[in-house]
Length: 96
Image (cartoon, rainbow, N blue to C red; front, top):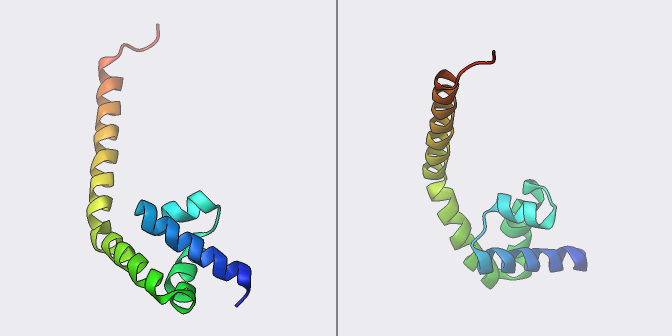
């Protein structure tokens, strides 16, 4: 494995450990694809630094376990906003 990829794996792992970020948040922060981040922290980091990999894995396993809850919250928020927009359109007077 190239040295720069090893360094990137370590940096991504440390970032996740420091911030508790998800794969998606980490990808956004570093300008990488989710696939690249996932491969780096799940497969490559295990070979480069097994101890760091185990710590990062705990955080990512937690995110995996609660993602359905976050998805439900986001859906509820989205539909609440849609209802509020509909209500605002009905109440506000039209042009003219």
